[in-house]
Image (cartoon, rainbow, N blue to C red; front, side, top):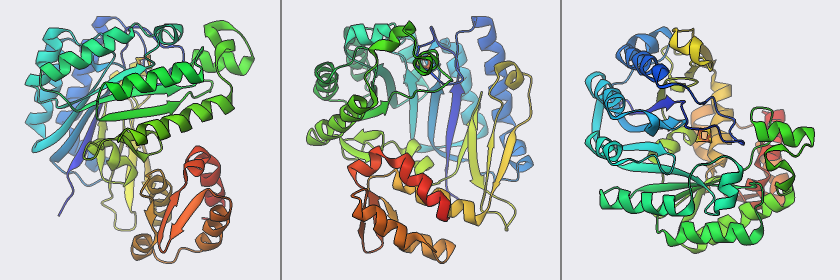
Length: 391
Ligand code: SF4
């Protein structure tokens, strides 16, 4: 039986651009929003055609929807409503579908919250990053600690209790004590899901570029060093676990039963379809010699709105094996080698490398189940690189 899809909609608009942000999102005038929503809706209406053109198998049933960005709640109520109506008119939204919307704290005006409820939204992800006001302000966030607590209260009063809080370890001015304060607030809030990321330093954000250049703009000289950032991440894993918000993926933590259905699809390679700027899709391939197809939309706004071409990659069985292994290792429960063998055949070279990483304390193997240790999760990129060289 065909598996229901996860649907991703990107809304790449924000009220301000955070200094650490390396996403394809930015501040645009409201005039752009309307043209953008038109384009996304046209693509959703043509989902079957686009899928077929990319060589993927189309499936109408959907059991998770994720509106991410950017800040989807900067759209106005009619625009948000239009997106959801277009989805329900063109796809089959299954009962019990997980419907998540990312929100910047302070953007949940009463009419927006009402619209979200009306559209069936049952999960909200709040981009908190830090409960310490000076840290949030230093990276350009517009909210304060009390804004987040008010949003959580309003969501609960409206009946949305499935709430995620995003936190970042490694923000300017962060210390072990201030991080502890953020973690304590997140735990005390009683929200059932948290995502914890380490600050990414790359050329795609203003802060990243300044750090690479060794400058002092954007509070770059107050960014904790790599070692402290790693310690902060590890302390988050321990504190959240101890509070019953258990780690189930490198960056994700949940109380039992609150793991994100949508995000799990990425790691266990279930099909998903993305719409909007820089949106990615993965679907079973029509061609029996290919395992899956991955395709993505343009990452420049004008090119996307003008209907620019999609990029498409065929996933061979060998590439699918690699993806299954690496994505599966992101999960705390790990990877079942027996299941991989059953699907892909012999796993040459795995045993000796797994034994090597186990002796270094980075992996644990119990019969055919392999998973990263907490240290292995911290060094996951290094581990993955070594495996790529033998695969
Ligand atoms: S709100 Fe999110 S997407 Fe927007 S600029 Fe900040 S980090 Fe980036």
